[in-house]
Length: 115
Image 1 (tube, rainbow, N blue to C red):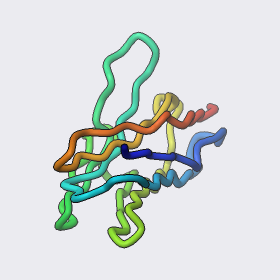
Image 2 (cartoon, rainbow, N blue to C red; image 1 turned 30 degrees about the horizontal axis):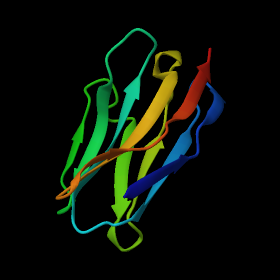
Image 3 (cartoon, one colour; image 1 turned 180 degrees about the vertical axis):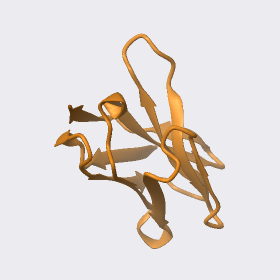
Image 4 (tube, one colour; image 1 turned 120 degrees about the horizontal axis):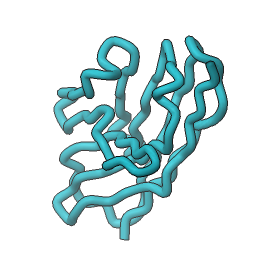
């Protein structure tokens, strides 16, 4: 089984920054990509950012230029640096791992941006 543990969420004022971290552990054979999703109440879960094994990245239009995703393959970790945060970024953020054995999700971490 694969376990993902997120950290770094919290409360910040608009314009501020937060850095989310996610560490994967367990029976990890090969990771194709890792990423971050978010889901507001009553809405579908949406992709925020993803990074593949080669370092290629993909961002939602709403966070392009403000968020940066990175990963440390040796530590099976992925990070999300979030700058210029807006109140509409407030929600739960989930780490995800896509590997040859399946797709796994973390428990989520709350990000709250006050205006």
